Length: 556
Image 1 (cartoon, rainbow, N blue to C red):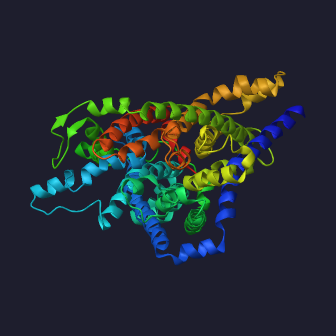
Image 2 (cartoon, rainbow, N blue to C red):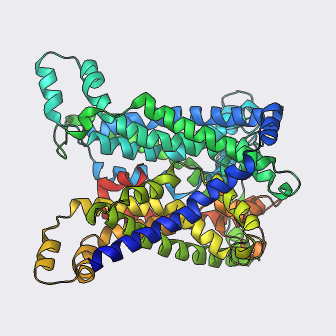
Image 3 (tube, rainbow, N blue to C red):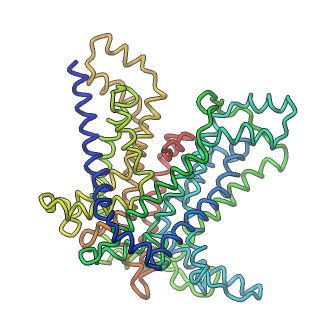
C-alpha cells in the first residue's frame, strides 16, 4: 500500500510539473491573445493575413517534398537487401545534426546570386536566378526545411512497414492481385499510422518554423512576425493573438490529418518479422538502393557541406568551390566575446534540461508501462504534447507568465536571468524523446525478473534500482542524449527567451553573429561546425544503441 501511494505521489508530481510548465504557458497565451479586438486586427490586416497564408503554404509544400523524399526511401529499405543497409539509418539522420536555420547559412553560399548554382548556370549560358529573393526565397525555405525534416517521416514509415506481415502480401499475390492492388489494399493502410505520426510532426513543425525564414529574411511569415513583435509587447499585444491563431491552425492541421488518415484496424493485429519478405537483387542491381540512399544523403547534406566550406574559406565568391582556405574564422569565433559564454550557457541550460527530462520521462514511462496507474495516460498524453504544440507557442507563453506571475519574476524572468526558464523550456520540449525511448525499452523487457525479485522479498525501490533501470539503461541513455543534444541547438526558445547577450545560448549567438556585416556569416558558420559535430556524435551514439527502433523517438 505504501509503495502504491509513493507511485501515485510521483505521478501527481509529474502531472503538476507538466501542468505548470506546459499547459500554463499555453493557457496564458490563449488568455491574453484570445481578445476579439486583437483577433479582428490580425484577420483584417493584410500583412498578418499574408503571413498566415505564407506559413500555411510553406507547411504544405514542405510536407509534400518530405513525402517525395521519404516515401520511396522507406519502401526501398523495407523491400530490398542491399550493401550498406545497416548504415542507412545513420545516413538518414545526417540532416538532423544541424538546425535548418544554421544550415541556411551554408545554403546561402549555394543559392546566392554569386553562389554555386548560379555559377554552374553561367557555365551553361543560363542567366542567374534569384533563389533568395521574390518567389525563389519561398522555395528555398521549403527545400531546406524538407531536407532537414524528411528523416522524421522516413523513420516513422520504416517502423510502420516493420509491422507488415509478408504473408499477407504473399497471399494476395497468390490470389492474383497486382503489385499496385497489393500496395493500395495492404501496404498503404498499414502505413497510415506512420504517415500520421511523421507527417503531422513535419506539417506542424514547418508551419511554425522560425529560424529558417528568419535567416533568409522572409519576414512575411507568422513565426517571424511574432519574433519581430517581442520588443513591442507592452504597447502592442497583437503577437499574442498571432500565437493563438497559430496554435489553432496547428491543432487543426493535426486533427485534419488524423481524420483523413484514420487508423488502420490491421495495425493492431498484424506484426511483421524483421527481415522477412525482403528481396536481394542480383548483379549490379543490388547497388541501386545503395545509390538511391547515397544520392539523397548527399543532397540533404549539401547545407552541411556548404557550412563547413564557408567556415574554412578565405573567400568564396562567384566560384563553385572556395579558392583559398583558412582557420581565421575559427580563431575569430573563439575570440568573439559572445561565443565562449554562449557555449557555457548552453551546457548549463542543457544539463539542467536533461536532468529534468530524464527524471520526468522515466517516471511517466514507469507509471504508464510498468505501474499501470490510473491517470498515467494523462501524464503520457501531456508528455507527448510538445510534439504537436509548436515551440514558439510555449516560449511565448513563458514570456506571458513572467509578466503575469510577479512572485516568480526573479526566477523566471528572461531579461534578468533565463537559466531556470530556458532549462525547463528545453526539458519540456525534449521530454517526448525520453518518454518514447524509455517506454520502448520497458515494453520489450519481460516483467518476470522483477516479479521474481519481489517474490523473494525485494522492495519496490530495490527492484527498480537493481532490475528495472539496469535493463532499460541503454534506452535511458538514448533519451538523455536526445534531450541534451537537441537542447544544445534549440532554436525557438533560445531566440525568444534569451534577451541579453550574457545569457545567449549557442543558437542565439549564431544568429547574432550572422547579422554582422562582412565576416559575421563566416564566423557564424565556424561556430556552427562545432555544433554540427557535437550533435552528430550524439545521434550516432543514439543510433548505435537503438538501431532500427530509433524511429519510435519521433512518434506521437
